[in-house]
Each structure stands twice: as C-alpha cells, then as structure tokens.
Figure (spheres, rainbow, N blue to C red):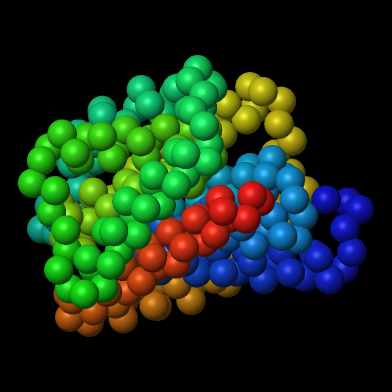
Amino acid sequence: MSDLHAYQYALIGLIFVWSGFVRSGLGFGGAVLSLPFLLLVHNDPLVFLPLIAIHLLVFSSLTIAINNRGRSATGSLVSTVDWPYLWRILGIMIVPKLVGVFGLLTLPSDIMSAIIFVIVAFYSVSYIVNRPFRSGSTTVDVVFLMLGGYISGTSLIGAPLIIAVVAQHIPKERLRDTLFALWFILVTIKVAAFVWAGVDMQWIHHLWLLPCAAIGHVIGLKFHQRMLQAETPVFFQVLGSVLLVISVMGLWQGLSGD
C-alpha cells in the first residue's frame, strides 16, 4: 500500500473503524461488511485479508478474556462462550474449512456466492419480521455450516451462513463471544496458511490500523450492551437487517461482475 494517496489512507482508516465497530457490536461482519469498501479503495484482497485476520485475533481474544475474567475461579458465573456447542459445530466445519484454505476443491465462485446470499437473505427477512426460520432438520444445519466453513477457508467471509444456523441455538448473551471464539480458531488456520504461502502480512500497517480498529471496537462494545438490554425481537431484527445488507451487497457485486 506504499503507493496510495493520502485520501486513500484516510478512507482505509475510516473503514477499519467501521470494521472494528461491527465486529464487536455484532460478533461478526468485520470482514464481510468492510472488505467490499476496502476493495473500492485498493482492489487487492491479499493486502487487506491479513490485516482483517490479525485484527480479529487480537480483539476477539481480548474481549473473551475480559468478559470471562474471574469466572473460572469462582465458578459462580457461566462462561460467555458456549464451548460444548462451539466444539460440536467446529467438528462439522473443520474439513470444509481446510478444503477451502488449501484450495483442494474449486467451485464456481459466482454460483456459490449467489446460493449463499440468497439463503442468508431468506434468513434475514425472517428475523426482520420477527418470525425466525427454523430448518427443523439437522441435515440442513450441517449443510449450511459446511458451506460456511468452506467459504471461510477461501475468503474469510463465511460468517453470514454460519450465523444463520448458530443464532438459532445460542442465547443472545452468549452469541457474540461464542462466535468470537469460533472465528479465532478458524482465522488462526487461515493466518497459518498465509504465512506458509508467503503472503505479506502488512505488519507495518498494523501500527496505525490497529488503533483505528480499536476505536470502532470500543464504540461497538457499547452498542452491543444496548442491544442486549433491548427486547429479544429488537436484537434479532437488528441482526436480520445486517444480514440482509450483507446479502444485497453480495448479490449486487455478483451481478455487476466485480
């Protein structure tokens, strides 16, 4: 990114503030809701994906550690991470994740993206109208998790499909931190692949982009607390609205050929 103009650096900084906000506010969306904007500034995904990945590792682990400080010692409070459910879905996702990371299977990206965003849009509308969809089938949930794992392995934007399943099974008070723990594990695999492949991790740019993401992170934490204090339908309507935005953005990009 050494050849960018000053205004481009400013835009990238603002987008990373936004990335930190949505990540801590909702527990997901740091990549999928910021990468499209970043690519409009500088069209090179391999520049931004390592930055987004490291930010997620830093802020997800920090948030979980702070929220669970002292809980294991006293045993009086339940962890903010639903570990049994996390390990269960991770067992479903790990193989597709590795397949995506190492490019062992190549599917037409336009078809895959269209399928995913249509499914996510269907889920999001059900949340917005306060009639959350329940598949009623473990098989359907497994398929969605496997697809989400594969997309996460290829591009780090599999969150919407995974959320569509996970949000049905975890209380809202534990949803964000459980997702943080899941993203931490999945992204660690992706970062290892980046290092193995010799991808430039953009370490010098972390010096100024980490503070930008931190500003958004702090604002997002306050937003998340307000959502938890709201009625459950409001929480899921916000969740559904964000998912719908993601879906529309994804479908628009696919149709425009970008």
